[in-house]
Length: 368
View 1 (tube, rainbow, N blue to C red):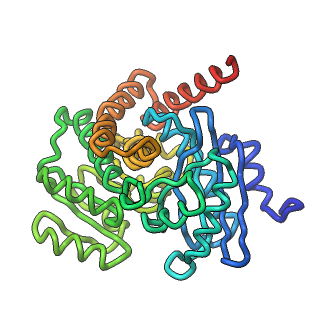
View 2 (spheres, one colour):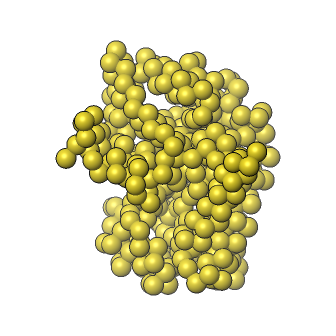
């Protein structure tokens, strides 16, 4: 079933009526000359201009792309609120294979669409887009972050994303085992690309034992060549989640990693990773809690990157950003404490804290 625009009715219902909706604005973008098809979703600007990355991905359908943009934008509202940033949540997705379809003409066209929003949305990198791409987008749009240092930007935001996830792991260890040290802990990382390979460095520096997997053989080989000791690889995520003696599982690829099939067989005591939207559907957070698995909410621990790109808008300072990202340790501990006090899973506790900040900001705006 579709509406008069041809958009699937379930997508419009999600946008206007469901708990996963509530978005302020969704823009469908098309530039026939370059082949651009994109969706820009703004979930909330209660705390300030929406900030979130641009994902370039070969979606199976336009409906899937819209749904992903909606979910990701909503997640950015919560992420930015929990990170203490004066930004709301937004996200963009470009439909296509970045290895085949990405061109300078397409990125420039995309930049013009972002610019047409007049600063309501600030974009950055995400899956399938890189610093060099943001340099191109910025030629048409001044509301672009994640640019190269040569072009006034902060560079690769995956460095601080990984650092924040590492702080979330340390907080999880402190909460569960009474010691933040990850020495001799066994950590499974699914996805060792932009963020995952930096996370490996932090963990190996502390003496953790690491098991990795990635759909790209070259990504796995890069890690094994660099770390001939202390790192092993398994065939796929299905094997990784079943590895015996796993202390921490870190989903660092695409979302939906925790679902009805994975949670029952997961051997780890902690889930803490960089991927967005790790919970496949509502209720998974309770399933994790029922199994005694501590879940560090993804949008809390992976906020290092957005902290970095937000700082770029004000004149980037790496050490200032690193200090802010280090506070993810304290924020994660506060969420675990709130969850225990309220008798709810950590994901629900994080949502409550973020929603309270957005509600208070919206209320203050209405009284001005």
